[in-house]
Image: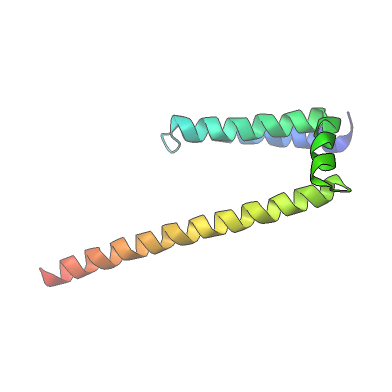
Length: 105
């Protein structure tokens, strides 16, 4: 096991612990907790068995793992940005409605 695998394993364990803490505090639902556990277990699997994702590289015609990870990372960032934008807009609308309601009283 090389240093990057050890670092990734520590990261996975750390994030698993934090996911559990958020679940115990009631900040995550069971489904959110399960989703994050699947993500962390998947990451651990890829760290321990990196050759297992070679099939994905071949099917998607990526030359290197970094190329695939870059594309996936960008897609995830755009998705998260859109989701955050929608949540902020929804919160902004609710706040505006609340202030308008209070002002009319």
